[in-house]
Image (cartoon, rainbow, N blue to C red; front, side, top):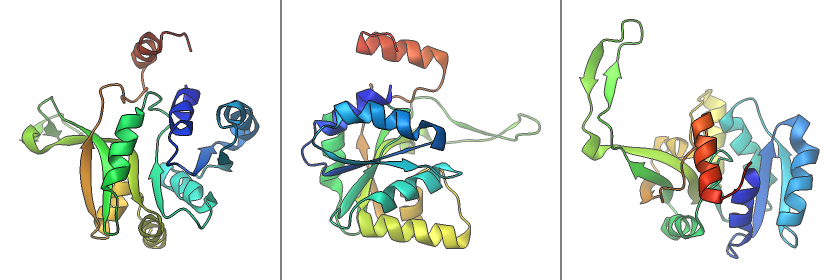
Length: 198
């Protein structure tokens, strides 16, 4: 399914370089997949790290010095829309980053892990589910990753690192197609939307 998001990014002329981060055993296969899709584009296949954060940092470091703004995308969201990517890109400037997100529609409970007892109910009017891509100035994101690495901090998304540095982060509403493929039912949903079997 990674090929579908690669097609989207390859069609966005504003994206100058692409770093594809994957597990060591998939480096060659990923290059075989990417080569025909990214023909004529600058791209690199990069070995991932032990965590998502380390992998994102490896991809960031693989880009050339000419890239001043970047986006980080998760291959588990293969149906990302170019219109959403461009909307996120427009929000980025020095001191400001962006993240594709969707308003939370369920009521969220904070639960005690050992007992399953509800400790609190959050106001869903203020809650958004963070997605990818996440967009930032390259120097700011590199600084955020370097600081987190030095401090031994590990988070699940890049904009959390920027928030910790005091960088403003805004949400950009994402299209419904930008769901994360996690469970077998998600694969079936993606296949239905793509009109193919993956």
